[in-house]
Image (cartoon, rainbow, N blue to C red; front, side):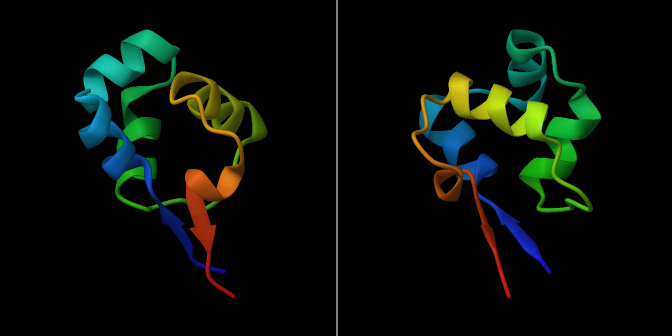
Length: 68
């Protein structure tokens, strides 16, 4: 199932770069980059929780969409 990430839009709205997001969340730059390009092959719960907290999201569909 393809995963469409909304991370790039969230980063643009908040004015953060991949590097800044990586530093502020502790996530690897490569993880942030893959997620922002929707190159997600698996979804790590800890990564999702970290991003949801950082962007103050209430549910996962604000972060990504799964195409069935």
